Length: 154
Image (cartoon, rainbow, N blue to C red; front, side, top):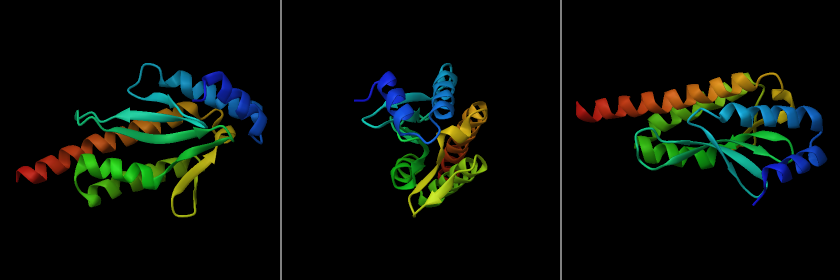
């Protein structure tokens, strides 16, 4: 398991723009405090997690901040989590596509068919915008869940 300080040591060593990347990542972590999002430390990264507000027990893996300096997510990881909660692929795809579009507003690009990512360093000065975009995704999850529930009750 990577510790916070271990992550930053690796980020400084492996990132193309280590000072900017470290500053952005530290600011992102500090902005998570007081929100429903939290950092889950892994072997090579921290993952920003968001517990399903409907109480299903599912915890969504939103973006990953990797020690090599990229920030993004794996569509193949997030999509099944959304489908499990919403119950429909159509609703899940709406949430996933809007999440992709939000990260693209920050400069993220699709890498292959699965990874949407951007350099952490390029997020310096945009950290509050990142948190706002994550909150928009959380709102989309909530709204789609309510929509699916209404449709099921009709």
